[in-house]
Length: 423
Ligand SMILES: C[S@@+](CC[C@H](N)C(=O)[O-])C[C@H]1O[C@@H](n2cnc3c(N)ncnc32)[C@H](O)[C@@H]1O
Image (cartoon, rainbow, N blue to C red; front, side, top):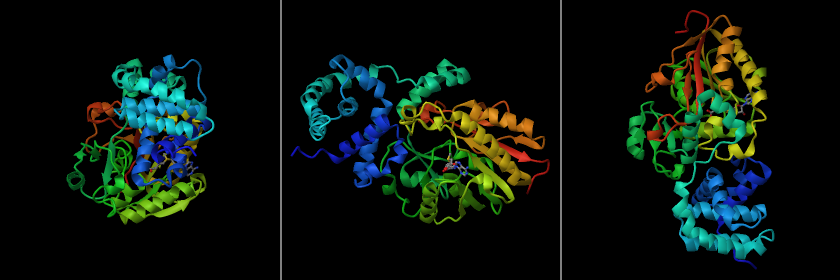
């Protein structure tokens, strides 16, 4: 029997095969790492993400050593080895683990000698060359529209931010300054606590007590734009996994958290339970939901192109084929949100997309469809004037705050229906 490969590396390989061969998103693959310990799971996810971020560099380094393209499993074993060696992994351990992975499956067993020979060479070459190689580019389907919207220089900076990955951002249930002190994090101007050392979230002080939840600095802003929501009846229209629901509930709103996905809503229940916060949770298509609300947060389904730092699989599992449908869905959801909003109520429309058709253009067009709609100035601590767009929304990109560790790409706008204001 071949020796058992290291479980974290075996799971990382399994994740890569499913992303690159089957086009499945990492977020769908929780079963692959379910039986691992928390630290093995974190290692497997980190290794797979490192390969996906640096795929282009791995392949450029491997190319001169391959006479023909090996089978995908062998190719992924080599990519895993190269990425680990480039990040300073100990040569003996990395090569040995890769050989065991090759031996452990008939699809790659015959390539074990080649894996051994190539990775031995890579042990010297990869650490010396990796940092001098070009930053991996976005795929054409996304690079084209982004260049048109933001220009070549900005797109190159976004690609740099995608390659650098993301720090761990936390939103405090209570005082963010106290959370920053307890966790040793940096308190950002917008109120997010940022940890520059990524570790096991559940091992952080205050996790069990529900003192915080994981949420990117940009993703924490849409709920803050609604201002003081204490006592208001607020609908979180697309709520799962619930980061914004928790913010609204922590701010004292009477929240209805709605989502079409029961599976994703399980995370909302889990998060509410851990933090001791409450919200009415409804599983349904928002287009079938009726009611009247003082304020609404519509964090609409979108291309998620703003989250590539955290989801490096995204450019490999889509060609942007759903974007046109998503734009249509965002438009009808925005109109339905206005139907559910009381006169004088406030609405935040948000998407974690870098594409203006899913952000700025949606709001411009909604203003032409609804004469009673006004964009209000976005006011929340830490917002910089340069982020404010022509129509009055906020445009956030991964290259913003590069020196602080960046932020996800997001668009958001605060709007009011009618002239007078509730409260
Ligand atoms: C961007 S995510 C929401 C993230 C969430 N607001 C948070 O902060 O954790 C978009 C959500 O929209 C939900 N969704 C998509 N179509 C929907 C529909 N027709 N009705 C309700 N929810 C829908 C998806 O299931 C997904 O959870």
